[in-house]
Image (cartoon, rainbow, N blue to C red; front, side, top):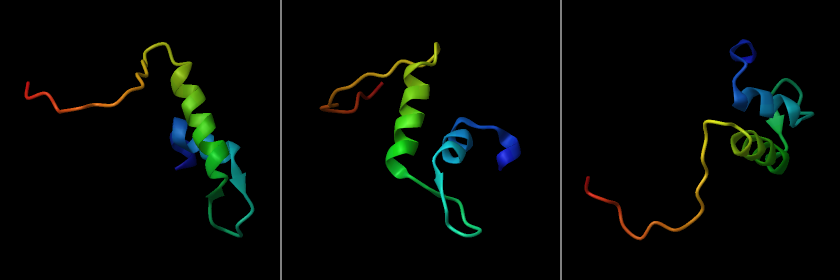
Length: 57
């Protein structure tokens, strides 16, 4: 997995905490890292709000 260099693995690596041989992460730091990366990506738009119904089309 580390060879994949994905956003998720980079965020996990940046927020890892000691856990013997397992990969354990600080969940708050991890979510902040992923959210910041998505907010700053030029091809990603984040919209906040509530969906009242799912459109049929």
